Length: 117
View 1 (cartoon, one colour):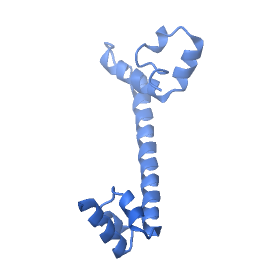
View 2 (cartoon, rainbow, N blue to C red):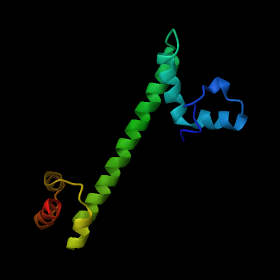
View 3 (tube, rainbow, N blue to C red):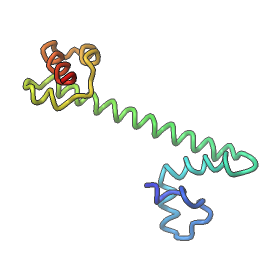
């Protein structure tokens, strides 16, 4: 995605039409243009800067939601698994996190022992 954005060249200097279209559709373009609006120009172009901030905020929210959904799915897998092998394969949740999500005690202990070993 970085090579199809305006990371290296401002949008005004791109000559290939297909690359202009790709850069317009790429959210990274708006973040880079917002950074240029603050860092490289004498007067700050607030509309370009605001677009960059909005795109960065939307992407950040989307990534947090995506990560939370994946973490929730992994915790459901832990909760539904019964073998030590399944529990040992997921080592990213703390004891308190699993406790707050009502993971049974015998599964919390197994995962906790696996993490410490």
